Image (cartoon, rainbow, N blue to C red; front, top):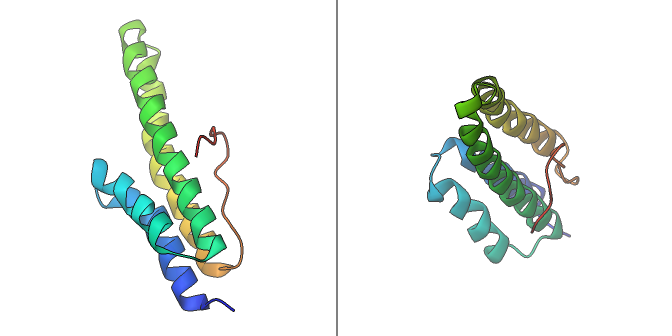
Length: 111
């Protein structure tokens, strides 16, 4: 019904958008994919990527404020590692199984 190659490509790009830059561009790519695609799996992957971006920004603000109490520094390091490792896991999952949606653990789903 839906093209598997397009599904892989759009799902992978939405999860890999965080590697483009840490600015609004990385947040805008999954939003654009959400509005452009009519594939339900791609839309869910784009929503999950948007939720991950929002959570990363929220956690960075909170952990940045906690640097005043010193505990924020290790938390920021852990967040930096998670913001690299988790999208890589998502990429591997959506490319190996394009019919499934990758769900990031430990995030709040706002979208």
